[in-house]
Length: 276
Image (cartoon, rainbow, N blue to C red; front, top):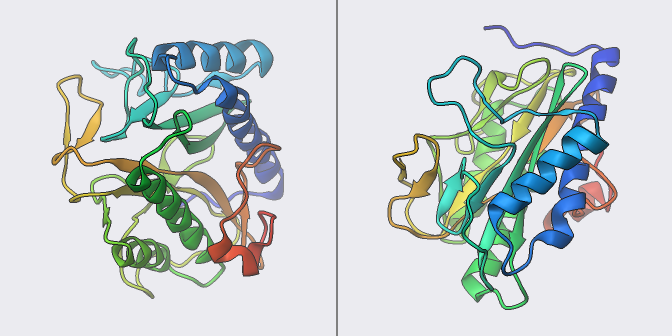
């Protein structure tokens, strides 16, 4: 399938959907506390998307027609869950780490983003460090985006930083093109070699969403057919943004008032902003 290059009008529609996705994370942040269940976080996000944003929670019943569609409005991945965690009634505990993955569909366009949350005020040094390094991996991948660069440059930047800190990169799951469809071409691997892969051109929109493990890289899928966990049950972290290749570099589309700023490691390029 060919890569869909977005027009200026289409990019503007995507900015709206992407901003809404980020605003869901702004809204839910105060609720991520010890004792709350991921099922309650799901209910709150679903209500906000439908009633406040007048939009659609894209993960719910995705993919259409599947014998085992995703059963909830958001993905909630706790501790050793890598991605696609199904919300449940188990309360979050002090020191847990959880990824909330939000995809909003608005007027036919999709915006996809996720953030890590440390539950409570006493995270382990390992958990805090993993979350921070994974955030840096995301932004080093974003910093590699510019016209003429290659998809392999993104993956190489992420892999290099993760390995430098002794972490592993999940290889079975990757970023993806996005627009009028939840998942489009190209696939965006979080590992690779510089100068390889598809050339980036203005108008491309895709997600970068590295999944970084504190232990080994292999994963497995639970019996529910969705929840992906680390095989060695080590902690895993993930951050995600939807980005646009511009004429001069990259624009992060999934931004909002409460969106975390770029980390120090890329501050010389991005400052406190999101356009390079």
